[in-house]
Length: 163
Image (cartoon, rainbow, N blue to C red; front, side):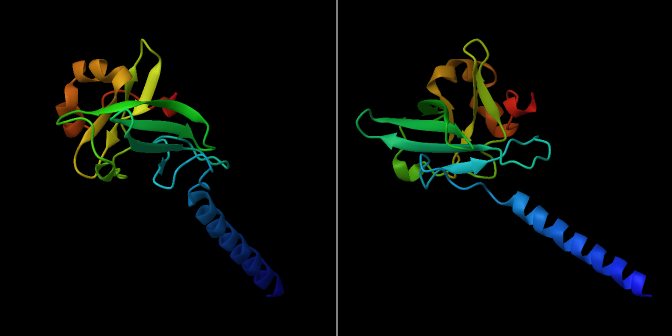
């Protein structure tokens, strides 16, 4: 009887530790100082279970001096990976700062880029329905299906985290 209580207590402790561990791994990483408070954190959609924090930070802003929308992709620690002018698929460019609100459910799951230029970045979906693409890969992305493809399927190229 005493052994059964000891085994039950040990199993209970293990279950509690497992639940705490799952909670901890589900927390987003701490925002690096180099990343603005409006940046979106997202995880690659097919990363295996890891004990270290993964993912990307994405930030977009209206650059008043150049009259363009700029976006920057950084790794989980805030190290820059890609920065460019981003253009809307449809409509007038640039968008105002108040329109640069991410659709967090869709942004980060679809990637585009230029294989020739070695560029791979997430397609940016905004809350107002707009889609933003990087200028450096705009022509290629539009050529491979265009904006209607992104709106309907939500996919054009691969996620680099899958490699």
